Length: 125
Image 1 (cartoon, one colour):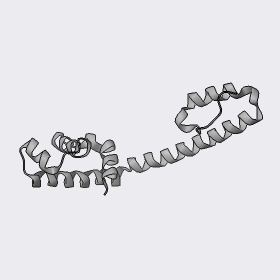
Image 2 (image 1 turned 30 degrees about the vertical axis):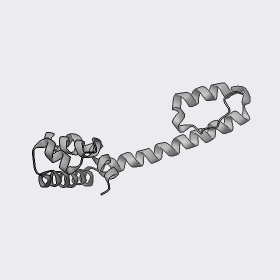
Image 3 (image 1 turned 90 degrees about the horizontal axis):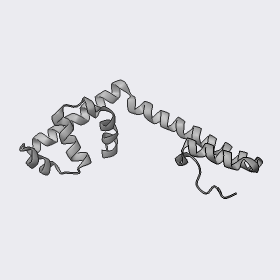
Image 4 (image 1 turned 180 degrees about the vertical axis):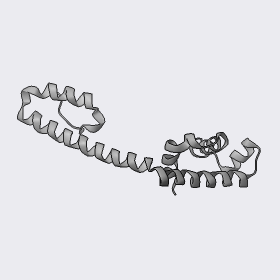
């Protein structure tokens, strides 16, 4: 498992870890501390930190295997992006066909969120 996959699992299931597990994984992945730095900070061995990280990875993978929340979120995101792409294409076509309503369409685009609307639209017309 790469670092980004672990962080995605941690974001979803991190609340199910113990306080110690959560603190060590937070120090490692979010604060970017090394195993040695965490061991010194916590007053434990490097092996204990390493074992904790490995155990957390297994535990988080197990949660995902059973619950599939990350998978479902990813599928939702893909569907959501496809939806907004279709809306953006419709908006561009509608503005072309009905230039008198461009300002209304731009208002709709703002409501939907600019991250989903194509850059480069000429909003001055």
